[in-house]
Length: 449
Image 1 (tube, rainbow, N blue to C red):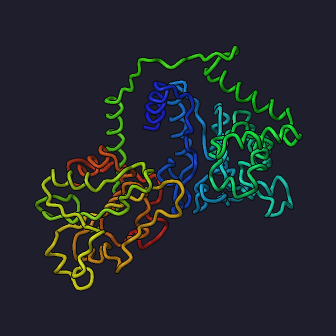
Image 2 (image 1 turned 45 degrees about the vertical axis):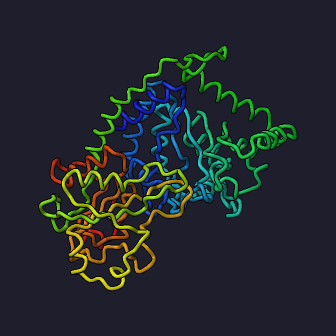
Image 3 (image 1 turned 90 degrees about the horizontal axis):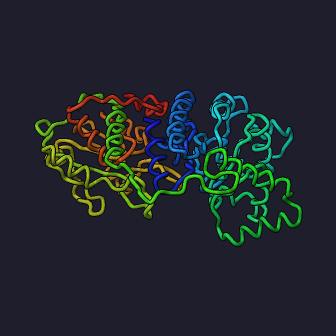
């Protein structure tokens, strides 16, 4: 499946003229509170990450798309997002080498051509390479000569292309004035800068730094040589600076074939975490009336990758014969909120079906469940009296906020084929075969009860 990820995305990208992929993500999911990484990673085990990354790279290479591993020196330790601040990989130098370092060392030894550099600090390695460095002088990798020329190039022996993560991110801009940060990035040993704020202003910051000697021409030549060398080595252009593979006008995305692979992934990935009271399988005979409660189903400014799922779940549950009532979070029944007891709820529905569609995405501080603040009106206070199931269509760690629920399933995404596979499994039409890539119990005893 990881190979197919690289192969499908690489093939479709190549069809429309793409030749570089900012993948694989080789971060480790070490902190369940991290609001951006969890379902973006291959999990929390370094060997699994290496195995999956190798396969994805193989798929990208099969389509002559350049892989770019990210986010060096490693996301997933801090519980904060580098889009909003310079986050910190707080592992010791030895712990880092035995985890993230081992991943990068493996990929470098296998010929990885490019690495994306994050706005993430790794204080232990900066302190090891420069004993006595003061906290105020610690830098995220995207402006740290110690972490790039020191750790990445000298210790890990990487001589390929380095490119920053997006420089409009606050984690980049909050460390020093942008006029200083851009030259510092190049002097750190980074070859390419990703994205601009004001592109003319950014060019001037860099050219002024070259003109006054802050950036040497030797450093410029080194960076440009790596850029050109990568393009030539990866078959993007030849030594005469001519494109080797111009984009074909006959585009065939093979969508039907690729959609079958997506359905295969869905069938194999949906994971039953627990079913304490043996509520599964759910059927219209056992639970004819279903209350559907969906959390996090908003547009989020148009950047929600998974989209809304309320209508999908309602339609698909009704197709299977359930009578579905969607809990209206906008128009509360105040009698129910303030006066309704167990019998009141039992008179309304036979099964509470909760969906957490709380997506992990950039520029947010948390992916926790956020109940209606008025009396937690949408929370299943009745879960010990009325059968209640919970499904996550993204974040696999919601048990932390609803530990006593009987039945919990991780689907990891909310696309159509995954919801179809999920409901087939929950209604007993096929078995759950997915395995946990992380600890969905969050290291807590109460989540296992």
